Image 1: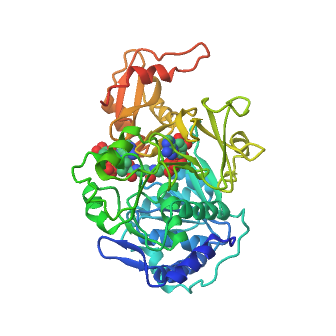
Image 2: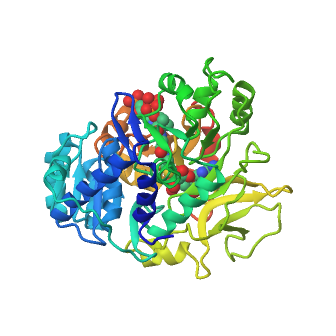
Image 3: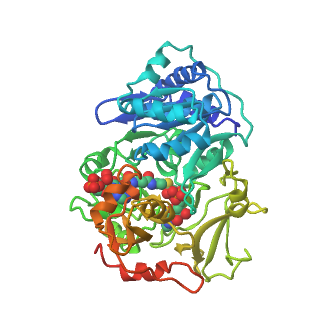
Length: 505
Ligand code: MLC
Ligand code: AMP
């Protein structure tokens, strides 16, 4: 495999020529050949902006085909793509720009003024815009630029992307992913899931995370398939489009929503060949109900930002409900004692650790965090608790890390607690995830007010509004006189989770 991932993609795009690459419901279309040419023009625009190999390009834009062309352009010139959740507030973006020091920040046209201010404060030298219709200054610059028709040679450990995952201590960590990490995983998944040029992926996920960007788009590029780009999940649209699709990928929230819909039948899904969930646990019940109603056995897989995809149920063979299957080719896993990292006997619950060409090379400018989580022998400590059953299927049974997953988005309690604790009248707080029928877990704040403070649920939520992305904001805020502490002085979150387990049911 070539070292610059773009070279691999370009070879497939050349072969696929006029075949669809990305289409949208409002009639926009890029063939593979169109996308190849447009990525050259965009690469020319990036070069004209002064982006050189190794430079970060931070991107906070709405989903569009052009945003993927920008990703390709960035790979092409050896830049490091740094996508940001569109829900992040200016406060949140300021941290990412200051930490990553990008050479360019691409924002939504409507956010230009705010983006310029944040770029100015953080020393980012250039800002361009890209809108959801392919509008904005970046595409205009691409029209004028001298196309960059080659690609920058890269070593296999050169960075292709940095994706930020929030840190358990509240500080987000930039996971450094190489061309080899992304390329090897895309090739493995395309093969394991039997992707071909005939596939049409119904793409309803955001493109700023591993799932929508790398699993969805890289696999499509690797196999020369096509994608229907939808702005977000909408069950009506999914049912309208399934007769023209072959694969759907989604976070677990997608699947109970489809199961609850009377339109889910074998006839409605007749042209589909694969449904893949991931990013959070899918219940065994949803798996079974989906199969009962549609005739399709869901193929669940397990991955994370730092490692791409690691484990998957088999394409041929039994796809077991409530499990994430076996290691993908080239990936090794072990289930270990959390303290010693010694492997445990089969059947016991322990820390899941992963090694393989898919595993990242460390956290951006955080050597200590890297050493803690990426062990000397190459195994990455996932923070997920797992066990393997007698059939060799891995079950994810819990998390050792203090993290909530709401609708597929990770929320780090510490980060939310720190902001709540700034509110006048708050003595302390604990943020937990408790079962939520739609989002899997609902972010929930338990707050201890100062004596005589006058504070209600609305006050807390209003305070968080401009400070934290919407999905991090608690769905409920509950007030208590004191938090339960153990003898080590740690808040007993298990007890809180038990007390409030039914509030969303
Ligand atoms: C929306 N809301 C959420 C939310 N999504 N709240 C908490 N958590 C979420 N995930 C808010 C909305 O702002 C709205 O608030 C209210 O909840 C109802 O919104 P909705 O219309 O029902 O939401 P919808 O647009 O349908 O979005 C839900 C969703 C979306 C699950 C489809 O969040 C989504 O696409 N998530 C995907 C995240 C993802 O890509 N994760 C992959 C990470 S990679 P109000 O107040 O306005 O009503 C990874 C590695 C791996 O984890 O293994 O893949
Ligand atoms: P992220 O950091 O956003 O990449 O999220 C990765 C985390 O999502 C993992 O560490 C797991 O906790 C969770 N995850 C991903 N896939 C699954 C799955 N199939 N089942 C359970 N948890 C999952």
